[in-house]
Image (cartoon, rainbow, N blue to C red; front, side, top):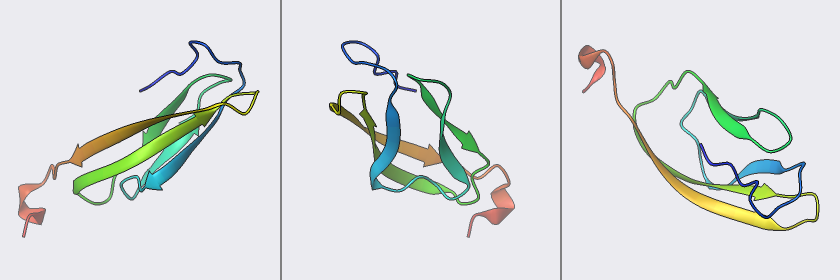
Length: 78
């Protein structure tokens, strides 16, 4: 995942600012300057989203992501 600490001031607030994470996944802060995706996806497909990190001074940084979730059980594919 992305770590925006270069040039910013911790702590950071992370959020999904556009699009949506795959159902079953969540953005979890891991400390004052890092976040990760956690959980078990419940839907397969392609998901696009933007994560924004805002530092202690109110300065934002954003990054776009495209995540492809594949079915592990091929019988689930229509």
